[in-house]
Length: 575
Image (cartoon, rainbow, N blue to C red; front, top):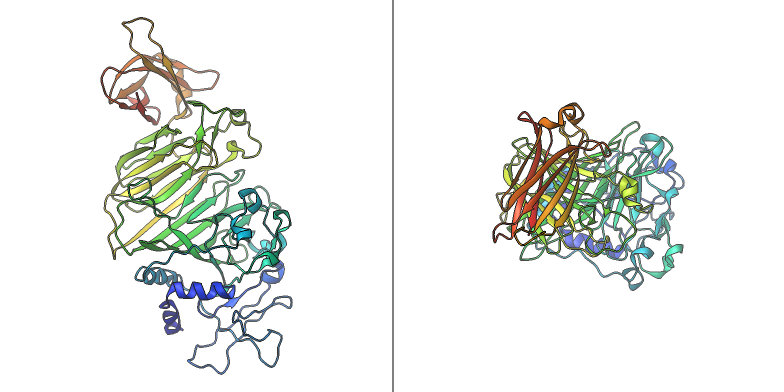
């Protein structure tokens, strides 16, 4: 068996994908193509014994299936499965996680082939709204929710999703391919039918789980497009995204976008409350083997391990990247004419650096591309969070920004020297994910090199519970016009802090101080006051430009007798 698997893994991935795509399915070894059906019959499929692989076998075991399941042979000239004269023969293939790592390693030793394929016009020309009308038939979902609560649904190709993605189940330790089937989808609302296009692969998948109550069928996670994935916890709606990897994002040579090309999804056992997904990532300069252990709950978590293999050197690699959207918030609306008070999927970047300091950086939709770097060694965590949970601030019943999750990344092991990088891209529309945050290691990957990285991503709400300090909750700014010729133009900052031990120390607010610093400009008119309406403490100060400097880095935190009470609010300011 081992020799057979090694021989199969040594095949060119490009050849395997092309042949399989033409046949309407994608093969790994000689695993069994699986037809989706009612979850009950899938769950009751008995285990099967794997026959030894011989160069020219005279017989092989055929996996036992339920009576309504159909066996298909991907060969164009294969006889029908019900032809007793010419029975279809399959050899089960055992799954080993090391196979995915070996595939990624060997893939990096081969020339890269662009995985994007030209879709039929009826699919390629679908608008976003039309594409979203293609629905997976929920009654055809894989897995039996009665066993573990999990169910699996697939996404159809179309619109921008033009990479054929192979989807495999791992059932009873063996691989079962899910071949393409138009019968899994409802096309009616999209104005299509299964006869409008030739067979395609899938574009991704989603896992459902009863997060809100025992009878619910909530979306837990989805993997759709490039290396993007989403994760939701209880009471959370679809929001920002995470990525497998970011390469040279906002760099002078342009961004390289890796894609997940194949998945292996391990069927949970009865009573199991975790599901494992393996993924094969590929791009021009790097391939990777990923493992996701996904645990649903109030704060759902994905434990991630990535083994990366480099065809060529990479100038800037972004590990554990997070994608958010920030159009406008309370601090600066710019020129948006909108009935909503705020439009964003996250409102700040929180960092717990290797020195134990907690930094809060409010997000912005800048006029020009803005990149911020936070130098560090062995970071303890970072994340894009949505702290404002007041529906009245958003007034959006469709996207429910007040319910969208924040993502918190916890590194496992020492990540060494590097920096957290925040990229803020000017955007005129909420349809653009214009915020990205990730870790950039100081040591750059080289051709032929390897890297392993382990971390977890938690879908949290506002980050409450991550630390015991007061949080910076609001950031507002206003320009102060000079009253006479001797006055200088300035900007007034109004910050709110809440939580932690502020309620205890606020009884003696006169002894509370704000430590405020600016790399350029003068700080004047500092005020610290209780805020009974919003709760917590309000800090106000003016920043006066007193030199030719174009920008200044600001830092603010609260103190009581040298005891730090809050995280550190920080922001770059362009005069």
